[in-house]
Amino acid sequence: MRTLSSSLRVKWCILRTSIEERLVYRGDFAFATLVRFLPIVTQVFLWGAIYQASGPKDPRIINGYTYGDMVAYSLLVMVGRAFSSMPGLTTGLARDIREGSIKKFLIQPIDLLEYLFWHRVAHKLVYYAVAFLPFAFVFWLCRDYLHGWPDAPMLLGWIVSLLIAFAVGFLIESLMGLIAFWFLEVSSLVFVYMLLSYLLSGHMLPLDWLPAPYADAIQLLPFKYLAFVPAAILLEKYSHQQLWLELGNGILWIIALWGINRLALAKGVRRYSAFGG
Image 1 (cartoon, rainbow, N blue to C red):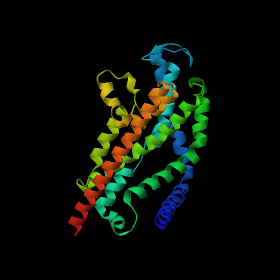
Image 2: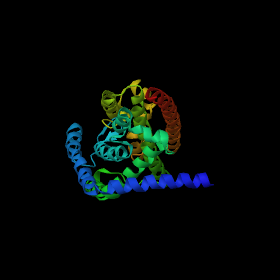
Image 3: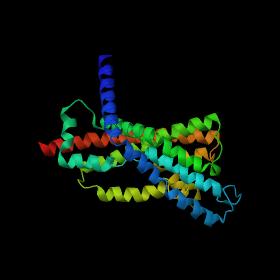
Image 4: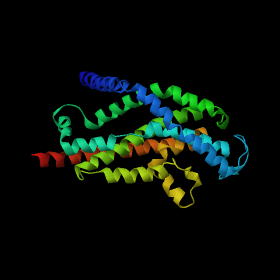
C-alpha cells in the first residue's frame, strides 16, 4: 500500500508540474490550434472540385463517401491526430540519450517511459482545455458537412478510439526515440516516419480508398488508429460488431508496443551504462 501511494504521488507530481509548464504557453496553443484549421478551407474547395458538388448535401458518392463525408472526414482526422501526434517526443528522447541527460532516470526512482507518458498526458490536457473553443468554432462553421450525433455505443467507441490513438502514437514515437541507444541520430528516421504515417494513418486519404491488396495489408498495421479509425467511427463506417473488434485489436497493439518499448529500454540501458562505464 505504501509503495502504491508513493507511486501515485510521483505520477501526480509529474502531471501537475507538466501542466504548470504547459499553461505558460496557453495563448500560443489557442492561436496555433486555430491556424491549423486553415487548411480545411483548401479541403472544402478541393473536394468540392473533385465531386463537382453543388453543396454540403450533394448526394454524389465516390468510394462510399459523399462530398460532405470527405470534408467531415478531414475535420475528424484532425481531432484524431491532435490526440495521436507527439511533437518533439522522439527527437527530445534521442537528444537526452545523445547528450547524457537520460542518466537522471538511471539513478533516480523514476521510470523513463512513465515520466514521458505523464508528461504527454499533461500536454494533451492543457492542449484541449485551451483549444476547445477554436475546435468548437471551426466545427460550428462546418456543421452542414457533419453527420448528427451517433448512438451511445458509437460515441463511447469513438472516445475509446481517441485514447487508443494517444497510446499508440506515444508508444510508436517513444520506441523511435529509444532507437537512439543504437543510432544516436534519428532525424532521418523521424522524417521517413512522418511521410509514411501521413499515408498509413489515413491522414491523406481514407484507408478504404486504397486498392487491394495494399489496403488490406495497411489495415493490419497500428497506424490506422492514429487518424482513420476515430474518423471512420463517427462517419459510421463500422457496424457495432466491427467497432468493438477494431478497438480490441487496437488494445492488443498497445500491449505489443508497450512490451517492445520495455524490451528496447532494458536492452538500451544495459548498452548505455556499459558504454558510460
